Image (cartoon, rainbow, N blue to C red):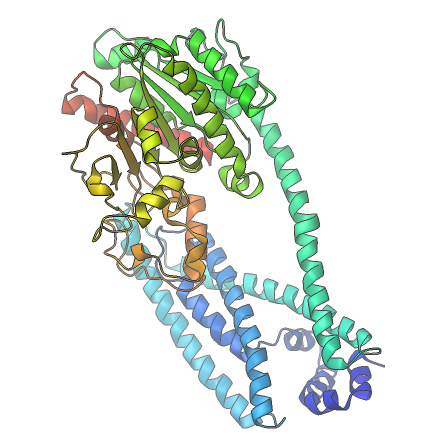
Length: 591
């Protein structure tokens, strides 16, 4: 006896509600396998309606241009989520309609007419938005100087997105089938309505538990092991430095091997005195670059203490400027920022950083978010304690720097702006996420009339926001110490937030930035998912857009910590080009 027959025999209410389902099941048994598969994947009307809205919205402009296969992934997932939301709404709607009609279903003619109208409307809407997507993508790529996609790519988007949707739908149908079978089993002992609810809750609970209790920890464990192995790798051609001002070199307190992959990369790629002299035409020093890996000490406090001793050994406290850098998840320090500073100061610089993880920032955010705050606070406190004991007339300027996820950790050492400005000579935070504590405070309490995208805080006396080369910043009236946030209007890392799921942010109500299309609008969940997808490719955009800051870091340093020597504009242009090329190489390896 089939499951459906069992349910019908045991419940008169169920027999009244499901005659149409029985007829469809009987008909499906008489068709071939393909017909049964099509019947099994038959779409829900309300789910299809909402899914179509989400499909169309996914083709609207986002912050960044996409390849066809990346757009297909975004569209397929978005349409699936829309379908799931619509199907849930459909269940509730059908209950209301049946109650209003006293159990009488809609006529076949009504249902057929509804599907026909929907089919025509959905086809026309999809065609309209696909044409619009081609136009919007071309406009966006022109803004960012990226090649436009070919026309056949949009056919591939439809095909791959459809296949992804069908795949997700099949998984959903398997889970629904499991819930129904479990409900039929439970209906032997409890009322049918209760059995349906209990079975749905149990299946959902098993799925959630399987993800959170089994698959997610397993995936993190696999990722941890994989990136731990990557952390031990050394890029071909890199070797320990032969100068004492770099960690891992002669006399260093930390071994070359203990620095980790990103630490070795940071140490190996910096310019030496000879390269700086060739650029500036003046005698230069070998810059101090000190770095401590996760294997150099057992705890963050131990790493920070070792970093200070290594910095002192290398002569870092005798330089003109000392920068405390909080790295990103993998331990990456932006070589473009370091190179720009060292050339501007003719090598009379010191940079100190330490590794707190070997996971990428997004995984570190999910698995060990608090580690970046601990590392940022421990490193700065240890450096500041030693620095504050030095003669105030001869000690270096103390600057804090952080990029992306590292910017959040860099701010963790300070409770408020007064403490920050009393303990440092400047702060530079680049592409900082929305949840950066200071940025969040300054944005929420911005001066009336200033935009959320580039807010003004207390008249810009201490804190300023800069949108990069496309939006010049007036530095008049900006007192020292200076705090600068550098963030492009097209940087998804800077504007991503979970709140995008349900609410439109202020920056999307305001005038768009210079490299953001005016057609970029907010849609529930869709915009959140679009920016989430954009983050994965944000560092691959041309310099001056998205999360690629490159040569703009030269100008950022000139604002926050200007050297005493004046540089000619020609030399600065050369340095911007040099740093830009270095940055592109670093990002290729980072991603």
